[in-house]
Image (tube, rainbow, N blue to C red):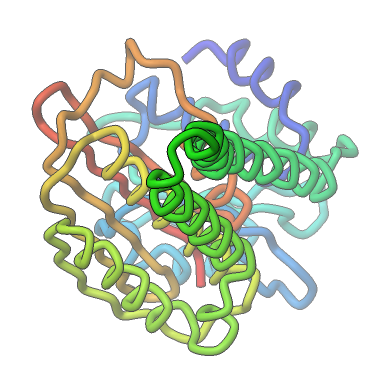
Length: 322
């Protein structure tokens, strides 16, 4: 593998999470690994997961154990086709441990550790950049909701009122339009505040949210096993599932959707799958909503993958460290 591409990718990365994410993605694209995970090594060699696999796989069962061994010894640790590779300055403790599931007969490039070490020493934009992007994306989403939903309903109500000035019998219709706009404002307010999430936690909030979709006629199959999580993680995961369901209803014209959240080891995995019209991801520019889903999952140190094809529905998979 020519490491020039990796060097450029690392030079463009702003945070350590983005650095390891780009590294693992490029190794996968080049056919060197099937998948990979990454851990940040803290004080007393405690491990904090930076990047998790997007789906359960053999790597998940022993990833942390291999990473701990590599962090303790300061050298590579191998098990079958799995390799834990510590990244450390000369004579120092490891900063990061990559745990790689290698393709048969493949090895990572020798310069991998040195390039990643140089990138990690660079000061990055850090969490502030991700927070600003997330805030901006949320503002754009609310703006679209107000314009497309509330705005169009109020415009219809205004036109109906103008007609009702000459034909009073149309007043009832105008009242209905205003009532619809009011309900849309209330819905948007609920989504912004997520009161169910505050009171009940992620699992119960999603159960009740999915019930609203069932009432609208969508066939929903749900399997949710979610442990207690920090509030910011619950909010991010709720938004990911929410966006995937919104896409299934508005764009995919799905009749059936399957939602699953489950834990394995020290990871939480998720799936949202629909039977809608599907699309070709290679030919369709990513929407703001899809970019927001990636951003939220990546901000939790996880990864998200979308599978879709025309006429074959859409499948969103993600995995994040607990």
